[in-house]
Image 1 (tube, rainbow, N blue to C red):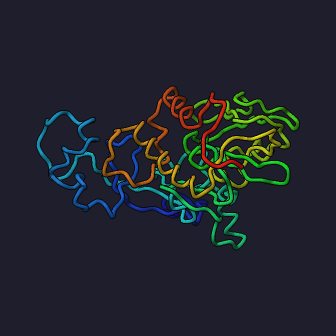
Image 2 (image 1 turned 180 degrees about the horizontal axis):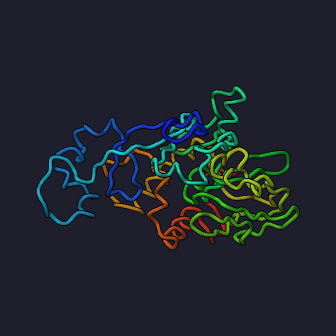
Image 3 (image 1 turned 180 degrees about the vertical axis):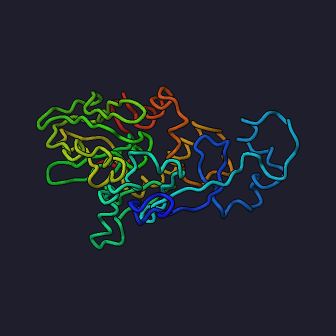
Length: 308
């Protein structure tokens, strides 16, 4: 990898061969441990029974093959410090990608390890998405942590994945009132512009000024340097989930995204992690709809079982 790209590539960037379902909208890797399982259609002559195949293939046309014609082998890259997030090799050349430029030294994971913390953070992973066990979660995909009389707040890893690369962040000023369900901050992304709302009333204590200088922190370090606001809520802020409950809910959210983008039925690709390249195949209007669905934009309250 280092020789083929340049001598400025991050030393933690690696390549591996993966098997992909070309017909699946998320283009996610198929889990190797299930490729040869009895229920897997992909490498067998009965692949025509797969619901994804039936949706995209011409009905029973062409010569029967031994394996599904939509199975392909592709080279993907991944960060050894963050193996859950994989991208195709073509995505590495994106000019906004830190990994293959001298700017990799600005990456929060690289900085963490360079300081000697080999654990690279306290996070767990659910189907390729990080969960901070120290935080509580709203079902609009915000996380919160108590700090004194206020709260530190940000978007979770699944939300930043849905939003895509953030190019600019417009934050409210200190002392600005928070009105439940009203636009508070604006994100300009590679796909379009989003106005985010909060499901509670309160006051802004501080905005994360670092995001104005480097908006990509929201993508690469959502639970750390990519936090959004410190706020002082008025009354109850809504119903929250502790991390363990959020892990179960997040797994359901990933499956819901797969269903909205592809088949409503479970397929043999289920169990893999979505690729970061999924946004390339989504038009801006569809993207806005998906983000609004999961981030509950326009809603005035958030659901859950446990209150802060």
